Length: 299
Image (cartoon, rainbow, N blue to C red):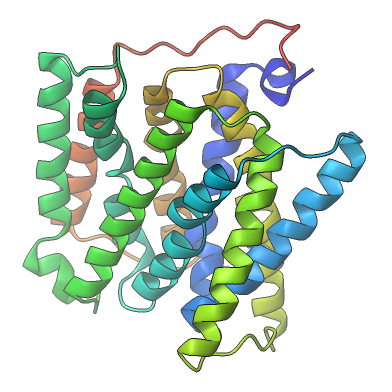
């Protein structure tokens, strides 16, 4: 029985969104002492170990296709992870989460362009337009000044959202045969590419030196990477690509709550208003999609 069948669709969506919603926190904590490619390397190592244990427990040899792991290991692996670490070294976590929330909006556009049968309705177009208006508010000059950030940081987060949307669209098009095996292969690609780039840029791959960084990396690789990745790809294989909107509708909420309560950050009114518009846009753009029923025999 698959995890999505065991837990049901909505509990799975909430679990995935909450796990991914903690990502920015762990990256922020680990990034205080680790360079971007160094962080990405150790995140990949931790996720590789966690997925390896899961596959061993499952007792089934992982299946993966080279093209899948190369593409997804880049769009959803080393590139997005390094860009996220780069961004969070320049901007606060809460506005970064709101910018990252543009992922389902970008996904709606990609689905319209590349996925037969998932073309946007006029309501979807209106939702996407409203969401990007919200992103424009989040990126306003007042937010840039108040978060001590830079345009490069926000641009990096937009690229992260675009990378995840690209990977989701690709996954829906190709339907990788084994979600766990594909996720496992992604980490191999991420580890190799991160190591090459870490040495090429002089960052190296020295392990995290503080207890906080060690804990952040381990949690990042397991709770925020391996677990939601397996659940998400299983879900995606049984649902329209736009179902990702339900996951990403919740991620910025979790991430913002964590940023405010744990990191003590504050949101400017314009950023808060922009976030509301982003979430409203996602709700409108994905309203026609209903969570699929998963047969108990699936898996």
